[in-house]
Length: 276
Figure 1 (cartoon, rainbow, N blue to C red):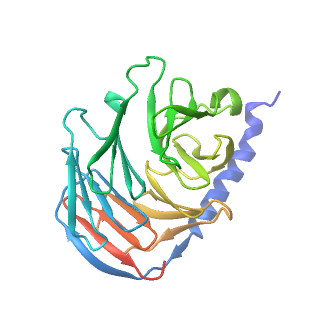
Figure 2: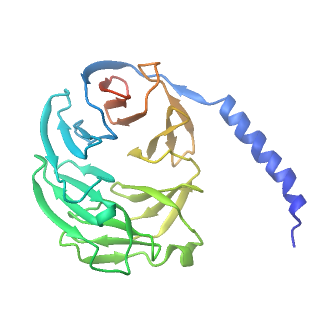
């Protein structure tokens, strides 16, 4: 049996390692070109891989802007309450999730409804997170069964990971999920970003702690931490801070390919990244 005091030297080593990392943290210099200022109060901002900007307002209205910051379309549904998530991984398919009502709404690129589905009919499910999957499918995370489930475009079960706690010992407190062509990323508030392969098998943990949402470009995770935008490479484990074009306080920032969006209290600014 390991005595509690025997952990103290190990804890001290971890502390000094993290201290050295924070002192020597690399800052990635970037060049930006200002595109537009949008005088809109928002609670969520995100970008698709074409540079389009999506905004969710406090009144749960979804707004879409072009890569030049021009307003394009809007969508509102007052039936389902608060928009808890928006996924724009597929630019042609916008996924909204209303967790309180366990309701998914899928929109096209003009923000017109394609389909809807509710999980309320099954009391044995508690879907807390949704994300886009290939072939117009969906990944969802079921908190009750601690399970990743892949659904077809008709919302039929296509694949299940099995109980992650039983398989991997992770009692996850996940509050955000995102996918790319290879992996599923879940933000476990206790342990970091858990990464699973396209079949729902655990791959690795990125020991970083995003506030909640993040973006993934290739193998790099961009996330907010301590009021700074950070970049973490899941292959090299390198962590760096992204230099931003503003110094005043802001609420959130997202960087995806060649676009940066910065959310402040009363407005949003959109920037082109010149050397990303």
